[in-house]
Length: 200
Image (tube, rainbow, N blue to C red):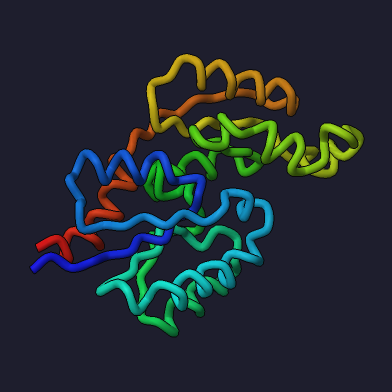
């Protein structure tokens, strides 16, 4: 008998998680995405995940959380440990999109790197320009980005449009630009390794 599984995901992963669900016929999986704006307020992630678990846990056989630590300083893991729930590995989504080895190489080559994904590239204006107040207070730019040297776009797709947009975002921030194609293989491996065990 197929288990009823809830996947609590960061809104920044919604498109990718839905695509993986379609490609792998994970019909037993229900996806609940939390607001992507939590990227800018990581201290709120543990409480938001806890609320979702407490609200939904009686309705599902299993729950998996599609977040990395995401800047919570281990607080998300404390919440998940209470319920015996697993999450994606790593410190942040950049690591599980690129894979730990590739990400560590990127970080080691230049610590002052700002990363974008497909989602963050699409929503850069809302989450960075407006979200950080740079549209109204451009004088804050050195405080936020003064220590960065380059922008690396971790691309989940082969979109030329997103590549152009990411390059424009790098120019806006005054950073060197590099594109690294990741696809979805790494995140698919991490998600499937946890949810496929409940498929049959």
